[in-house]
Image 1 (cartoon, rainbow, N blue to C red):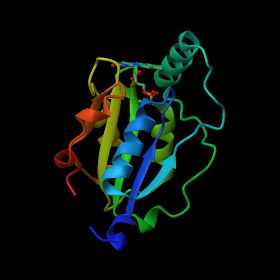
Image 2: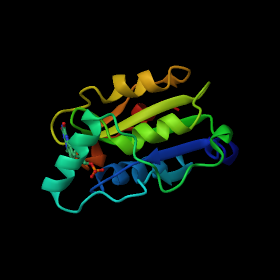
Image 3: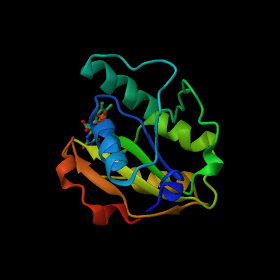
Image 4: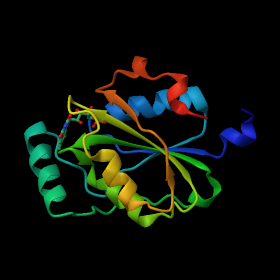
Length: 157
Ligand SMILES: Cc1cc2nc3c(=O)[nH]c(=O)nc-3n(C[C@H](O)[C@H](O)[C@H](O)COP(=O)(O)O)c2cc1C
């Protein structure tokens, strides 16, 4: 792939405890592209017990937390990797906000999910429902931060 092609790749991710970020960095190392960290305007609590409570509550209420910043130039990317931890069997609320405030029409999207044992659960089906005009390719599903399980074949580029 030449640099012109890799510049059209975006790797956008939310990570609470760092695992999804490690996957994003690994993908970036393997395919290049631009990294974008999705961050909620209001930080989640630091204690695991509290984030479980807040996260679950937001998911039940279908709350879309405002983000710290919007990505200005999504139109210039052709391939978009979107990363989320599995939160209560679905994608994390900041990723839901990210998907709802940008246009994914005509984009090739590759989801990547970090989980704590549940696999992708409904993460990918829920993501697909939010961006029906995108072509969503097979997801990269990683247990915790086991980035050694990511192969070039999974990146499908
Ligand atoms: C609020 C919350 C809900 C979670 N729910 C699930 C779940 O339903 N299934 C699962 O396998 N892991 C679940 N986990 C574990 C995370 O998916 C796992 O630790 C992941 O690697 C975290 O990624 P991160 O370090 O990028 O935040 C949950 C974690 C949190 C904080």
